[in-house]
Length: 501
Image (tube, rainbow, N blue to C red; front, side, top):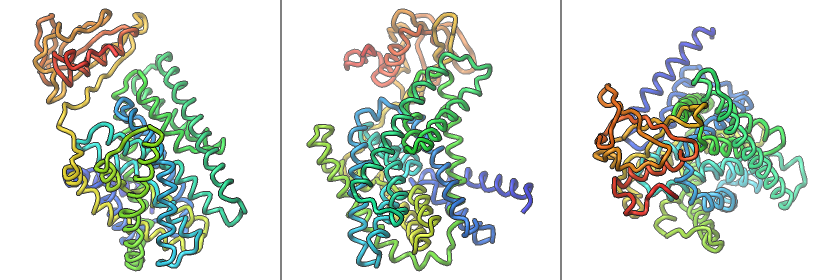
């Protein structure tokens, strides 16, 4: 196939995938199912991914997952997930270990796996998928704490599962015991966390103090910094996935110039990575081999969804309660159990033992493929109903307020751009009622395509765009005050939201 034909075919697939996102958006299904379908269709047409190259698929898959995790970190609001992080960390470590052991213990006999193979299957399936979780849960009206647990868990648990799969795949070449296994896992996580926590703040500091000649360079620099953390962690024998997620989380919540543009660029890169990844994985599968994987796949998937995931959530919740990290009700535990979506991550991880030539690894890949398709079809669309049935839905709130900034170097100030979203209680508030701190002022309002300088009595409306100049010293207070009024209106102070904390 010539380069021109390849580019034409690739562009056509991307355009078709983008169009399909619109069609599946309202069904609650993750887009991954459609992308996998495109891959299977291409495979049937004779353009399938070469079966003898699972190593290439593994490398492409890991790179794509790094992009998806970087976007997940960059678009995660720290204020929403901060309270959820302790429980998410327990789920991503203890919960992963419990899930691996339960799946391996239950399927070993019925499916005829040896201990090592059963543990590999359990490890491959232990991770929830960031792309699936973000695409489905961010559309659900969940309390910030509950949604934050699932988002943070999906960002954190890729690292330990990748480490577990790699170590188990190479277990036959070593005589390492459980202690060595746990030590290596902990060491890789510590190194990855250290690199991410170093690169994130250093990158944010550099971007705030280096005036780049074009605004389009900022998003590229931010994404490049996340990959610096990924590559640095891998070179130091640490977890690149944990490093890239933490670096993205820090950069995405730092006061960087052109933050909104950076988020948009990262989202576009992540969508492209998802499309390419899922289509490739669909092409890697052979549809004629999948029927034989249906029964073992359904057995393993049922064990995972109805036994391993609920028990891992229960154990993690109990441990979090004993350590006084969090208290999780049984309703929340039930929802967390059902919302543990699997997606591209287990399929990518299944290529690791396949690439290493582990006996029966192609059958494991096919079973994991079946599990992802069937249980995503079952779980994705039912999550809104499960949330309402369990009483964990949150009342509809105004959309989160997005604030963009550009640096005013000589004044040591920032220019904040605020667009008033639908349902925001900023609608109807007069400018003086914002009660912005000294050092901040609304300098311009853009309404219906026309701009004007407001007075204190100017009443704000939905879809207005405000330009606010704020000194560096009061910027945080200004943002908190705007978000408080966005949620509670002019009487935000009566609700304890003064924007001063």
